[in-house]
Length: 119
Image (cartoon, rainbow, N blue to C red; front, side, top):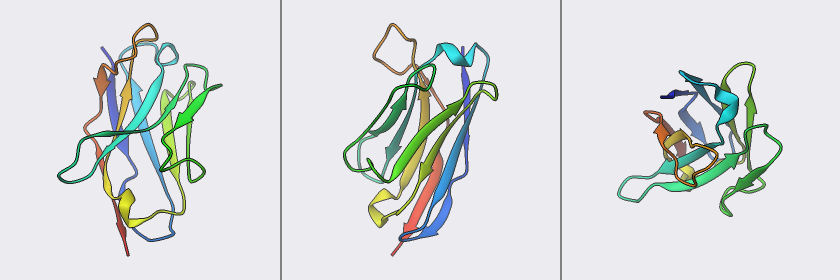
């Protein structure tokens, strides 16, 4: 079992920046590929970014590539999402998630943190 707790959300103006953190506990964090997802009101949850166990490989959705950066610190059991040039359409609840390396499906989810970008 892996427990995930997000933090760092808040209200920011268009063009601003935020850094989200996700602290993990329960199992060996470095064994798990990690991802960030988001869900806007009335919409389905969408993929944002993912990172491999070592942090050497990352991938992003087209809507955030070049503006968001995912990273991880395995010594601190934490994954981050650095968000810059924020837009109102980035407003959503952001979730971090962990998956077993042998499965494409994310199994463990945090409770989410709200990000609101004002225009």
